[in-house]
Length: 234
Image (cartoon, rainbow, N blue to C red; front, side):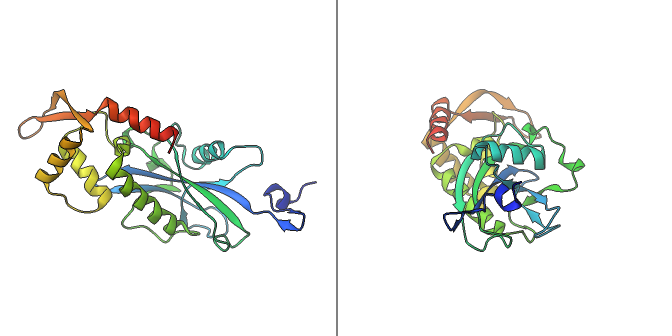
């Protein structure tokens, strides 16, 4: 009969203890004029009842990608989202139970594309990236790294389009940048810079509002193709 250590991959082989492997996933969205991250409340020790990034142990017979998608569905109900491998965290004391190495993924989602009613789940909640609760393990460190990576990517990819509807106004795009960067941007300079890059293109539609109609844009097809290529070869 296999022991718990055998199941978790911690049995000794040749006198060397093998570490366990976990996967975690950072999910960002824009909600209530804020950059939010999805957290789950831990149901068991260590750090019971504390908030954490969704994730768990990788089974011996599954890939990292299969493991992260399984954990995501089991813990949050979220599925069919684009996941990108972020970084591997392996501090020897990051888990008080044993030596655990975690492979972290991150995802950007538009909240209107999720078919999960988080209001019905008491252990799964969106938190502002700028007012986080005390987190389990080294998850605060992981989230800080994920935010930094997101901000870097905003400079040279169209990754941010996953946070927006297919068509958007330039004001909505600027607000998305401001929420991610956590700073106000000059409207004229932002629009000049965005339009000069060619990453967005004007549609023939407008959005009616309280004031004059706002023109709608979308990310340029060539830029989306380039982003798709980056996803295959990050």
